[in-house]
Amino acid sequence: MSKITKGSCSCGAVSYEVVGEMRDVVACHCGQCRKQSGHYFAATNCANDALTVSGEDNITWYAASDDAKRGFCKTCGSALFWRPEDRDYTSILAGSIDGKTGLTLKEHIFVADKGDYYELDDGLPQREQ
Image (cartoon, rainbow, N blue to C red; front, top):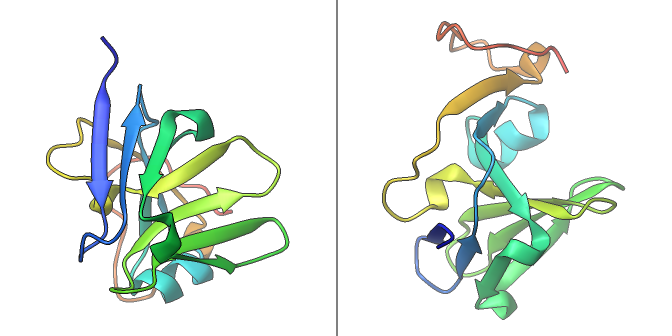
């Protein structure tokens, strides 16, 4: 039997289900992720065909760049997804998962852009970009 992971936004207008495994969590410290979240993004991902979203009409997709868009609930503002235009996966904000995730943080990316008010001292790999 495949693993099923469920998640939602804060108000419940958007929910999702992932069938199968998801990647371990990556913390992105880029300026866009910091602006949208107020700190940094911690996201997993899954294949697009493993993801089912309910309440899609409550998602606003923001074209963050020519290559990717960010999906958030238009009612409560919860950041939920990051989706590249030319790939077949969707990143899912780890904090939007309901209950225990079974995932672990595996690395930090775009650390050259991280805020000056915190340190990364967990011993995990760090990539400048």
